[in-house]
Image (tube, rainbow, N blue to C red):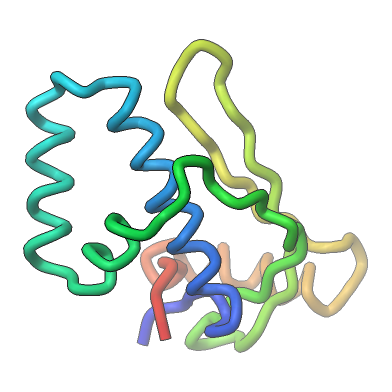
Length: 124
C-alpha cells in the first residue's frame, strides 16, 4: 500500500490541482501536449471531468499548512507543507518537514530511509 495524504485532505488538494491546471491552460491555450493531457484526464476520470467543468478559475488557497501523510510502514506523519513557486516559470516544489525533535520527525526520517518509492500521494 502506498503512502498518501489523509483522506480528509485529499479532495481539497485535488480541487486545487485542477484549478491550477485550468490556469495553466488559460496561459498556454495553443499547447497541444497540455490539451492532450486535459483530454486524457477528462476521458479517463469522471471526477476530473466534474471538477474541470465546475472548478473556479483560481485555485483555492492552501489553508492547511499542516498535513498528515499516511505511510504504509511508519503510519501517519504530521508535516508542515511549504510550496515554493519559481518566479517566471510554472514550476512548484512542495517541501514536507516535521517539527524537529518530535515523533513525527523520527517517523519522517524513517520513511526517507525506507525509500521514497513508498511515499507517493494517493487518494482515499
